[in-house]
Amino acid sequence: MLAVLVSIVSLGIVAQQCQAIVIYTGWERHALVGSDIRLSCSFFSWRWTSEDVTFSWTYRPDGSRDSISIFHYTGGEAYLDNKGPFKDRLEFVGNPGRRDGSILIKNLDFNDNGTFTCDAKNPPDIVGRPSSVRLLVFEKVPIQAGVITGAIIGVVLGLLVLVVVIYYLMRFLVARRVFSLNVSKHGKKKKEGSQQRQLWTPPPLTCYPLP
Amino acid sequence: MLVLGGIIFLHVSTIILLLVATIDNAWWVTDTVSTDLWGTWELKSSEWRYSNLKTSPNEFHQSVQASAVLACIFSILALFVFVAQLFTLPKGQRFTFTGILQLISCLCVMIAASVYTAELHAGDNGSYGHAYILAWISFVLTFLLALTYLILRKKSE
Image (cartoon, rainbow over all chains, first blue to last red; front, side):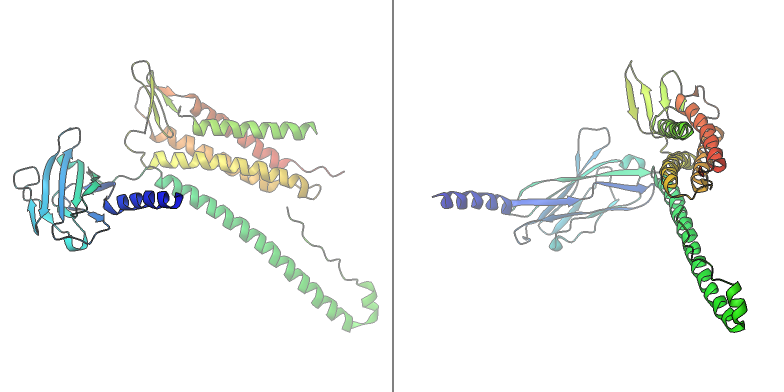
């Protein structure tokens, strides 16, 4: 009885999952004035890519509440904006067969700041949430807050570690060299005679204490 | 024993001053704005609001940030090294490593405060805030501490 219930519930959940389409775009895109930008949109679906797959892009300017449709791909044909702000500036660079519905916007301007939403449908898989990417157009690429800070801190700390390591390495090496020098001295003095051997005693082995 | 306690107390309070100077956003204040090093507090309709720095921090600003953080790090490192050296240094020797670290910390605070004074808010109306003053005070304290560590010798009983 319990097994039947569990299987029904799990089937329901799995069936739900099987039907949802997941759309991926970027989160935020930065671009310079006058440059081109490629807004990527792809989707994941449990079904095979159908021939009736559709992609549509809508644009909502910053500070506005209305969005306009700027791109639509359906029935194997791409329809670009020919009246709105992106007239003659859009190009379809996606591959619907590979579930890619990316568009290329040319010659960006400050008026293009806004949110672009991609909605893809793969019949019969049509239940999904459109995904949005925010476009930010800059005059010049700004230095991200904290890049130089982090770089300076990293370099200085790295130098500190390097200096300390080299210091201890040198002390260790010098200690070993002194050790070997004493041994060779001891050997030489032995050959010179017993008198001198009694006068000269090998120096105590001092291990340098760590500061 | 008293000397040891006094030095450690001074060192810890220097670290605290440095941390407050670095973390508190009050290097430059006007009637309605309290800003730097990390963000800006603005008084809007009798309510203080926090926002990011205007004109995303330029190179000088970021170098001041880095220097202030490094000063704190080196001072804290100096404290740990001092405690370690208390136990491991041979008698009669100076605390050179601690002194050097504290000196570097002093240098970093000086760099931070100087660059800030020279480059930022050169012509604005307003005054320097308490964090800025604390930075200069901790510069003096770190310098004194560094001298102390370089002169002090471990007791040889």
